[in-house]
Image (cartoon, rainbow, N blue to C red; front, side, top):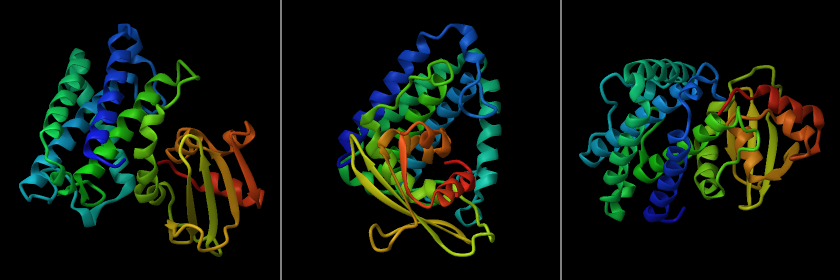
Length: 280
């Protein structure tokens, strides 16, 4: 995404799409399981509501030059991915209980407040650094995270009852840098059973084209400079299955079986990639 206006427009479209869907849900549907383990639909929406507040707080503090963790949040050097996930899981359940029957109203209010805050920012402000539990990042990247959060959790809410659910292509440009800059490193853990670094190339096409080289080593995973080394395995696919695999929503072996992802190279190493994955 190349401008604050385009980011804000995509975020608003994702929010409106999900709000329209949630507004039409019958009361009993809020208690059905989502694609997120341990969370019902209402829990996911409560999580998104809290996420909107967190982004707004982070941006407001960053604009004041405050980039340290807010009360109750971990210091950057203390970030632990597993602990972070568990903290989010428990927080969503607690927030949903606190909101009671007002989850949808709170979700709408949270998104409206964030939209008004972001719409008032001048373009240079979008480069202001602000706090995120993993690292400091500019406002524009926090908004990219928010786009992916709303889009992916919208998929989580719809997919269990509608397997034909798709991500909106307009959101794809936000997903790609997040995968490279954050998802890859958090989706794998160190593994001493890897005797050497193993390289995987994802060649992604339609509607966007990108190449990502991922290297798994005993120390974990990283994104390598594209095209500078031979990879052991090459995966070819379109953008949506790539995003859903890297965010842990669809198993790699499943999309290989359907032909949505094709494999060139050592099939055993391709399987090992999927087995090592712990979720985006």
